[in-house]
Length: 206
Image (cartoon, rainbow, N blue to C red; front, top):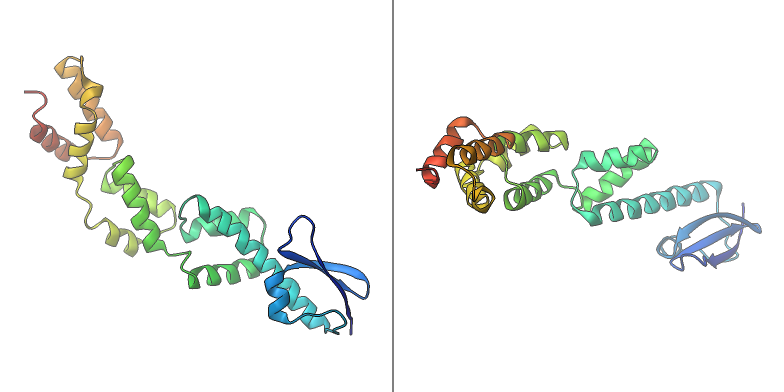
């Protein structure tokens, strides 16, 4: 069996160690994995153990890649899968990584959908129809989408948009301002019935 002849700290990343077997560099692995596997210089290890360590090391690298990807904002499971496929990661490793991410609660489509909904309602309000379309494209299941959208109050969202756009309409003739506001709300997926009701409640064009 091959023998571990060196475990050298990597210069570019001190958290990782280069594994040498019979005097030859094999691959790098984290210090945590070295400790977990109880690797020491002079130890003989089987080819199967080497293969297992290589797989675990690769899995750790991919996990760290995903952690960075998730650090920018929450992601749906589909977004993570698409990201890893684009990186040409093997399906076997992807499957293991997804299981670990779920067990660590990094992947939860319902929590992602609630976050997405909150962001939209606060910064870019839009209709329930548009929200459903966006979440569906993100790969969130129909049951989850329907559940998180249950409490979306379109009338309140329209009212929020109208109030936010008051200054935007300043100086425009009433008819032109009304058309502009209707077009804006329509582009965000709200129905004419809801828009009309919102305009009546706002009392802007009397």
